Length: 293
Length: 190
Image (cartoon, rainbow over all chains, first blue to last red; front, top):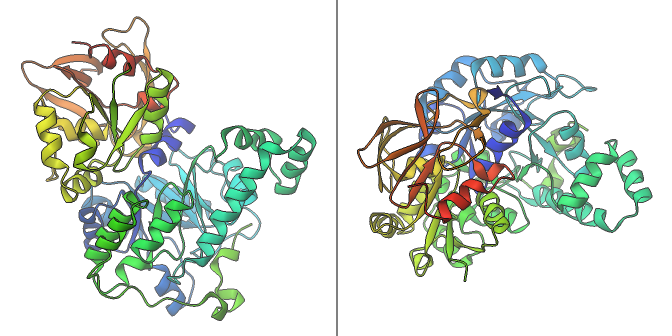
């Protein structure tokens, strides 16, 4: 009996496909998310919109909160650690969370090293803005990738940019010569074997979700249409005027992303989405996606 | 003519089942709405989150047609979340189920993700062990009188069948081995 293998780490992400993972800060929100049909919840101290508003250092959630959330629901519970903060990651592993998100939404703890994720039994998900960034995270042991988007803005434009970049870079690989693929591997700072694996699969060897700025059922459906395997929704649910209804509608739109009639139907009567932010109005230091490398 | 197989495609690892069926030369149709059930001769219920799949089935009017089809003996292969959905009841919790199989299932019985594991299993009807991948896996807590146990981990049933329904705690679709899909297609181990 072997635990913590690549197959079981990547396998849990496979089971989340076609689903919605929702940010929650306490047990009540976690139960609302589960009842709405979330495939997992992400435990964190503050949702990204509040991190933007309140400022200060954003850290791993309090272990008591994480445990409270784990006890409240039967679906998988993920939690965020700071980039490079392998001690927060070990604490989360000790608590028994199901996935760790080494996340740019929190304040980075190390500006040189991401967490070495291979020694962990608990799998990791990491953000990426392009193919190279995603493959570097896989090389460090990540078992799932998500777009970074621009969390807490309610603006989907950056997530769209990131999935389009990943897709177009992957699509270019199969037509390249060995020499060109080797050059790509050097440019992306990953092994040529990994580049060749992506070229032959025609997709990432792990599940790839959308994240960062998804606020409405149509946003979720758009990300699915662009080829994402599922969707993370952060501030979009609990910053809307009717979280339970919003959560359910986003779940339904993610399943029926290719049916605009269903997306239209589930989007009716939901009240107000989160307000949202224009990316161009953000100061450089407010651009969370620029954290990590 | 290969049979018409549907895969419940509300959420979960639908793609992996499509690939496993494809290795046997079988194409599938996704099932998301009641009308998708017409004319299918077999159904695969994939791995995923059983609460999510059950709630979506409820909201889109699929719960009752699926219950009726299973009660009518529609050949069904149910993996992990699928095993929970086809159970007559579960040990704890309140979530929509399809039923069809006279068993009581315990969700996340082997533990959380850190306890997820892989191991070789002896499966009744297969001549060589099968590599089982167990992810936050359930087990069968109680078996009804007409249910046959096809595989166990320790003394816990992890693969059972009754009529043309085969339910497993693990994920044959995450391996390159389609023997369990074939076993089910050929009559389901019973």
